[in-house]
Length: 183
Image (cartoon, rainbow, N blue to C red; front, side, top):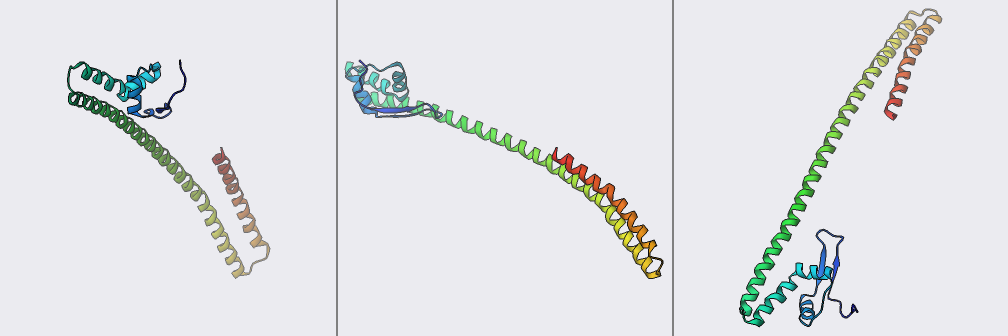
């Protein structure tokens, strides 16, 4: 009639494999006293071995074999079932490790590609900055030569103007590089 009588366990299908807690002895008692489980509960009791134990105890009651033989058969069935469950768990764990390894390898490849691109970009920036530094040093040398010879004041201004013109394209290149990296 479906009324709640006693809680003998719980079932959580959200874990893999599903988590089942069951009071084995109370479930066996209720089955022996005539309880009719629903289809879902019947499957759970079958997986846990309660129905197998009931079947074996029925054989003992009929005299087909003794209780020691029933326990021996039940333990063999239980060990076989446990091995199957452990096999399932180990396959899942192995599959998960393989997925993690593949993901890690892919991440390493992406990081390697990124570091190579970054190193290449850094080398290009250093190459672009190096002529500017040399031009600035050349300008300083020209300014020092001019001050030593004490030429007119107009002569040092001309090289300084040239250096600012030479530096302007480099600044534009840096701005373009920043725009490209932002994209």
